[in-house]
Image (cartoon, rainbow, N blue to C red; front, side, top):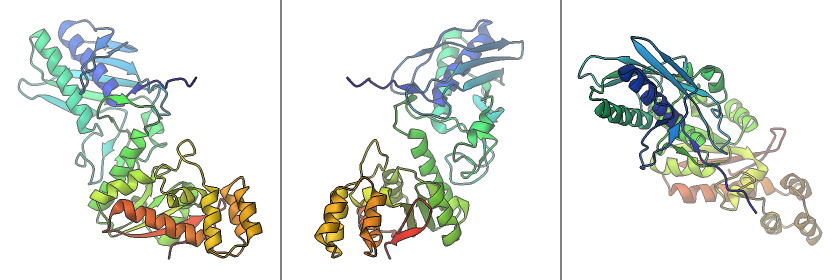
Length: 354
């Protein structure tokens, strides 16, 4: 029996819980522990506090992020919120503490100079502070500083630097809940990467599946870092976003096996979601004139790399790239020129669509 995967909480939700607890403590002298919050879809989870600190001018509370069964880089991170008094009628202001980044490039939902606390988490924090203020009979005015100890090091494992978010992590979340293997943070980074590139006036982007393909795109296409979109296995996330946020030209660079999946119409190229269809490759080799012995050997092949070797001098890589291009064009529905380049594990080009 397959174990049901456990949901988790976004950094925005953890920041909200910490901020509400700190706000209540600042005005009442006591931290609610656990602290219950309200999420955008009506859920009302409660969170234990991992750290509390109270003095006359400010209160700080911390919540350890639990991402559930999602492989999230911030799982186990301590999310801290420090709340200070603010002038009456000023509302809630946000600051970036240590480990939380600052926006430096255009194209993101926040202007340069703002702390990288996204609009969704900001609205969530404000709503819960307003709830707490109403219950306490005080005004919902506060300066909220979010910090993540070790966040700057964790940010090096994300795409924040390329997006122009400097100094740490982003506080993310829309619904407040992390669905296991939804890759929501990765999809968010892909979308924001496109937004930043468009804001910078870049009209040629490269979607890459990994470091080797990214190196080829950088070295052979001469594109700046902001034009390199690390889509990983999430080809569909990039293509669907470009459909409504188009650029003039897109080059997809990836391993032969992953592009074979795209050629078959798969938009999630991860092994858990799709498999290389050797029967498809056998059919393509048939179109290229391969003999029955080769086709039979391909049908029994254990990997895409083995199929590529069996193809010999037949241009299988080129045909796979052309089919992958057709699949990508079908998603984009026109408006963007597409080139596809396939590489082997050593980074050697083994096929192009043009």
